[in-house]
Image (tube, rainbow, N blue to C red):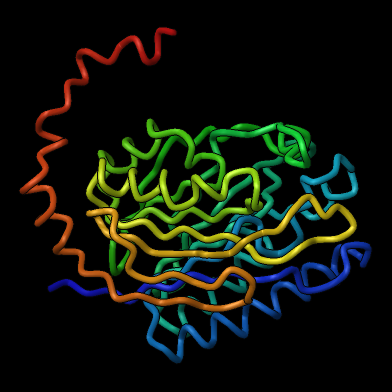
Length: 288
């Protein structure tokens, strides 16, 4: 067996949203560093946090104030800090951040850092929602322009999908074709909107592509917007779509699971979806 120990961090927002942006970032990073240290003590080898973990889900409003919460990747302070923690714990860390590429050019991004602290690259969220109530993401993010990269880390081939991306099977398939062993999906989603899909779509991606999924959702209510309950329930599922570990609905926590990467080959040798797919017949998907 090729076992890797993976972890997901789900958390409540760490302070009032009307604090200065530097205080908001520092409070959330401090909260997550404590959990990263816990993950290190528990021997976690692959770790991912929730979508834009350094702050609240500010897309609940449309305010230029939050543009100043962006960071450069990989030269910003949070990426540098995570590189040092990755090296310290020999841990691969997926770091979801609000990225500034240039003045006025912002992305919803996840940096991927290898176990020796090396920055491997980033994924930029491709599918950007703009829906009521309170998901005004087109105000903040350009659509991703880096495709669907898979990062060869020390322990596994890692792909990233971010929140709303999970509703689109096309990118999930490309991540599989690009060699992903596990796809992390850092999210911010509330009850009443998509909770019934939370445990449906991503296990389906795992089955269709025979890889592992690590799905992360934040927890709690975030004032002053109160667009709904971020219902947690972060989880791992395996290439058969079976749940391996699941977090609570309402608590900040680290969940971990041992994933047997040999199960990918085992499942693909039974369900030959990649052998039997017919890409020459799918032209209509991009022509429409």
